[in-house]
Image (cartoon, rainbow, N blue to C red; front, side, top):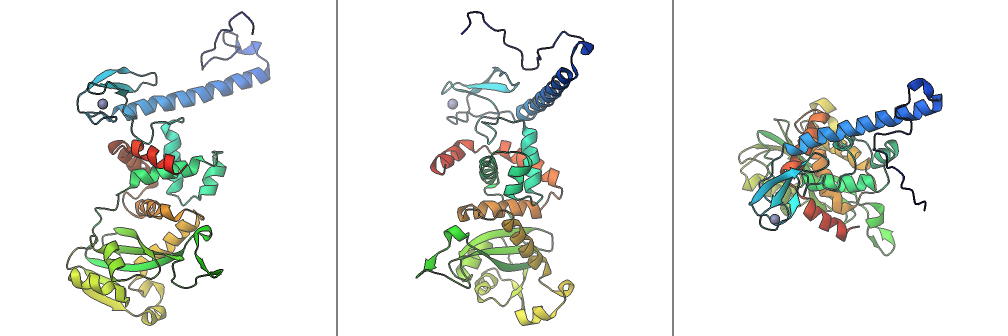
Length: 338
Ligand SMILES: [Zn+2]
């Protein structure tokens, strides 16, 4: 180590600062220009982040829950700092959210969300943006935690169509008996209840494995269909309890009858289309862990429901992430599932 301390350059500096442009070689000029534009881009992006975060004023401590908090200066990234008078810890509006440990500007998150809502596959998202292979699963898990409960308040009404779609359990998790994979609607099929109504609302719920039943259908739709609505469906026995307990007007079609009709005359075409799109979406995340299925169904719900535009959906998710912070719980989840 030399005894002479090297002067540390500011992040925006280049070795050629103070020189006129015509004193630089073409190569030096190129490196300097690229460094400056990169710095400016990232810097202005982070500045925008501070305005976003600071718009969510905090009145409770994310560490201990106390409501006794005071403003405590601005941190080095421009975020409002708070101090808890109960536990003495400090925090910012980002503390306790999925953005707590962010290393990239929020624009990277906005980009990621638009990609997810565009049916981009996990592999493509990793490849195209030169993200590390651990980033996409990590961000998906964060997205799942933000969307947790997003379908809780969905109520379908008017003319409601329901159906089940069966999706194979990921190969690595399939159950074999005597060395043979089970066939048909077995434990190796994930049963997903899909419903939609005349108002354009839709619902996606994991019912379990294998064929649906009265209890499974009730579990998926019982709290999500308005009493007295019309239920358009196939002649699945498992739907009877739902019809009876919610006093629904049942509009039943046999699969034979449906098979004869062209698509645009099919009375269940809306729910059929959702089942078709859902399979395509799950295929684009092939090999997903079945434990993540509810998370993927919540993402798909966002894709199929208002707001209509992908960018509006991304904005809605960012707002939800700040309005219901969950990271502290999320971190524990991640410790259990590294
Ligand atoms: Zn506290």
